[in-house]
Length: 218
Image 1: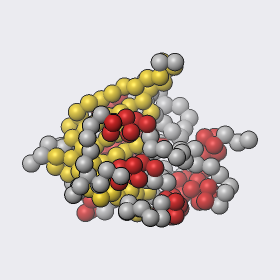
Image 2: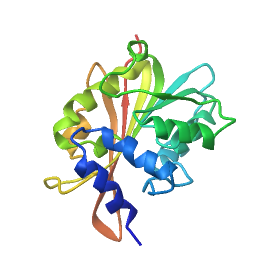
Image 3: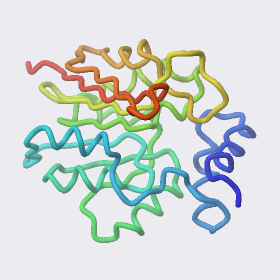
Image 4: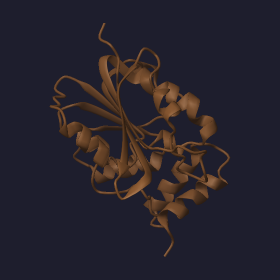
C-alpha cells in the first residue's frame, strides 16, 4: 500500500509552482485516487491543547484559519462562537470542505496566502496558522510568513502550529520550521507572547512549535 505522505510528495516534486500541487492532491483525493495525509477527524492536538488552557468566547468576534484543508480546525474554532472564515488555495479542498460540513456556519473560500483580499488586513480577532507554511518550499517562506500577521486585528491573537527542526531542511513537503522562521511571524506590529517547544518524551528528536502572538490593542 502506498504511503500517503510519499504519495503527497509526488505532485509537490513535479510541480514548478509552490502551491499548485495542493489542488492536484485534493482533486485526486476527491476522485478517490489519492489520500490527503492530514485528513483526520479531529482538530490538531496543539490547537485543542491551547484552547484548553483558556476560556474562548468568540461572540461578536471574527476568526481566520489559514490553509483550511478539509475544515477540521475551522469547525473547532467556529464552535466557540467566532464568525469564522477558512481559506485554501485549492478549489477542490474548499469544495470538499463545504460538502463535508454542509450545515456549517464557516465561510469556506478560495484565496491565495500570497495575494489575500485587501479587506482581510487587520480584520480578525483570532488567526490560526496550522501546518500550512511548513508545506511551502523554504524559498517561499519569507513572503508567506510576512502575510500571516497582517490578518490580525488590534488586540487580536495569532496561533502558529508547526513541526520544528534544528538542522537544515530535508526532502519535503513538509519542510519543518526552525526557530528563526517561527519568530519571524512577529511582524507588522504583532508580538510574540509565548513560544512553546514541544517534544515527545519517547523521541527527543521530535519537535513541535505552539506559538502565540498578539497585536497590541489601539
